[in-house]
Length: 209
Image (cartoon, rainbow, N blue to C red):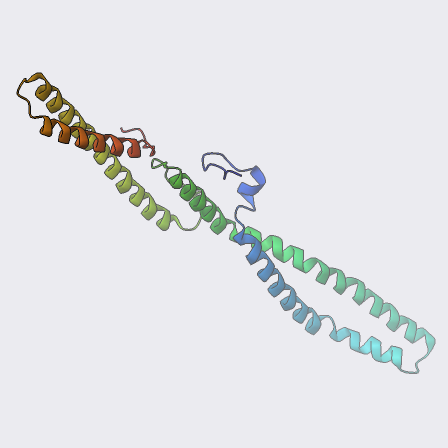
C-alpha cells in the first residue's frame, strides 16, 4: 500500500489528536504511571476511612451502628472504584494530548522522507506554530535547499556539456577529413551525458524563482 503524500492532509481528528504511533506508546506508559500513582494516592487518602467502618463491621456492635458502617463502606466503594476505573483511559487521552506536538513533527518527517525516496527534492517541512522540533525542521530544510541547488547546478551543467558535445560532433561530421576515432569518443561521451540526464529526470525540483 502506497504511503500517503505529505501534501495530502490527514483527517481532522488525526491533525488534532493522534498523528503518530509513538503517541500510543507514551499513552500506555503514562496511563499506567498515572493509574498506579492515583492508586497510591487514593489508597492513602480514601482507603484509610475504610478502616473504621471495617472494624465496626467486624466487631460485635449493635445492628444499627453496623448498618451505618456498612453504608459508609458502600459509599466509599462506589466513589473510589469508578474513579480508578476511569483513570487509565483518562491518562491515555491526556498523554495523547501532551505528545501531539511531538507526534505531528515526527509524522511530517516520515512523510518527507518518503517523498525524498520518490525523488521529490522540492518538498520542505512545515510545522505548526506550537509544534516541537522547529529547529530540527529548519536544519533539514537547509539541507534540502543545498541538495536541490546541487542537483539544479548539475542538471544545468550537464545540459551545457551535452549541447557542446553535440555541436562539436556536428562540426566534425561536416568536415571531410574529420577524425572518426574522435567522433566515436564524442559519441561515447554524449551517451554518458544522456544517461546522467535520464538519472536527473527521476528527481523533481521546485520551480525556480
